[in-house]
Length: 354
Image (tube, rainbow, N blue to C red):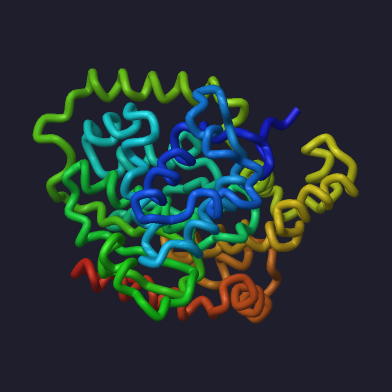
């Protein structure tokens, strides 16, 4: 039986993230009753240590808060507070990591503990680490705000580990807002908008990281606690994340259809379709997302040619691949290559072949 949570499953501890949002909203003079409207929650629910809410309820709260907050920064401010409202063991593990790669691995491996609703994949070449961010529950109604919380929190975590965040570049799928000042203030000035993916690019070169003398005993104890917390979760994976994991496995994206995926989840085709619809998506959309991420990794990280990438994706010629890539990302492969070149130029190095 596949284990996963859905958008309406109550998995978020109310006294952590939701309570932090209410405290922050109150400090911004946001009407709490209006913020909770439609969420089926009372303010007293967030003071109950045994109460959990769903991602859907939290998104509803965050969306209302964003509409009521005059500053337009409430999601970014919440993200800055997030490292101190989730288990401190994760921050300890990151702070006492020996390398940037180790720290990013922790963010990827324990993302469900940190911020359920999204998952991360880390891929690296000799010079750059790419932390790709994906929605674990389909297409969010409040994607921009939800991502703002997550990305602001990641930047805050990295700053706490004494990393120079001026070396970090963000790739965002969203268009540039009319007022960029809040994003630039909280996330840094190195942001590329209208990207094919949401990702964080971090250079792998030597630069000051973490505490002066990382303590491996502290790190191991922190990771052991994170493992225990993860095991105690009803499920560490969202429904769409589990679908993606199945499609990635054994190249199932080449052969799996809707019926095969429904069988994997032990439900009927009709139930599987309804479940996808509940998460504001459909099977073809999610299959395309998986193929898009595979293609981007092959092209940009593994530096494969169009023909090589097309062959791995089961596409019979380069013209079909270019059309498919344009449909998945909005751009042709060469545009994405130029984007990577600009990122690498930002870090003042070039590789022999792009």
